[in-house]
Image (tube, rainbow, N blue to C red):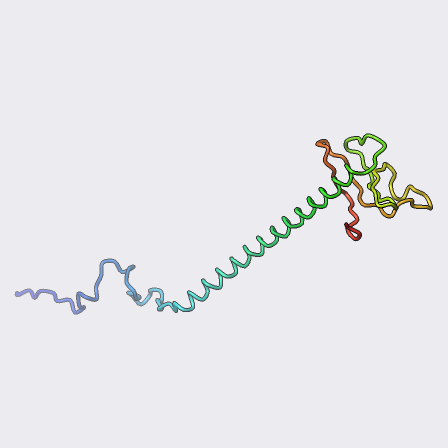
Length: 151
């Protein structure tokens, strides 16, 4: 009997030993493979990038605002500290005690241990400029500052 050699009816160009690398489904049960919409993918990536950078810029803006507020507080603290050291003072301030800086009617300043609400009916000053506390390094922590009538 003459054996005929088997002839595969499928073209060798259509057969692979690595079907997972094909650009198309290789059997009826395979997952559907559709071409990607590259414009849609890029659009989503760009939108995500903008969202991320907007979030980072907002965070930097908040940090910048905080730094600006801290700089203003330091500037006010320096101004009040300079006024305290130029003010009339009839006692030696003690660390961690609270004092009050007043502007007298003649425009000079006075550092006092008496709070504004302790003066009785007649307040003898133009205004209370600041409530301060002497820190260990001999700088002043300004707990209240009269911002409305600032020089």
